[in-house]
Image (cartoon, rainbow, N blue to C red; front, side, top):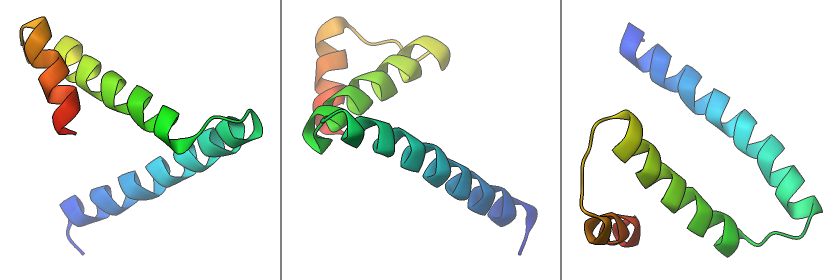
Length: 68
């Protein structure tokens, strides 16, 4: 396994652990997957816009969220 594959596998395991903890919390408090999905899409696009220099008009931001 090369270094990129090892890094990817480690990242996947880490994300799975974080999501498992988050989902336990959300389920305990009655949040549906649909509600989580809506929040996750919005935050994903917001981070891409803010931290990775992807600049879109507000209307295009809403389109990007809809594409996810």
